[in-house]
Image (tube, rainbow, N blue to C red; front, side, top):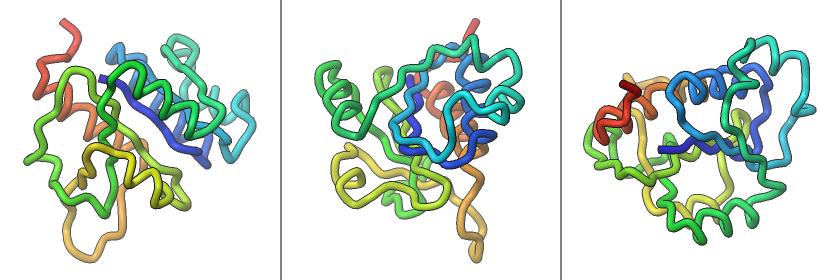
Length: 152
């Protein structure tokens, strides 16, 4: 299981996600450009010492990330409020990459189209979305549960 962030805007969210990835031994990908300098103090503060222990790969743009995923045969699973499949109904596989959009804009249409699946985390009516770091934690936990990928 891997996590990918598409053009993230908020350093604190990225730090939190990198901390989560480090704790679960999950590689993380940053699809640039970011909405902040990647070495920003806020990122370090949010990720604390865990962020430096995360397995992070930076991709200069969507094309580079897409090429990486195609070469490795990874299935891209986009977590989106516009997802067709509710999270509890989706069957995750070992090589999946959980992709999350930017906090302000999500992902563009061509990224939606490139994803093998579009999954939504069910919420109460009237709510727009979850914080991206919270959504990443929820989705990663479900994917690891299904694939029996939690650390021993």
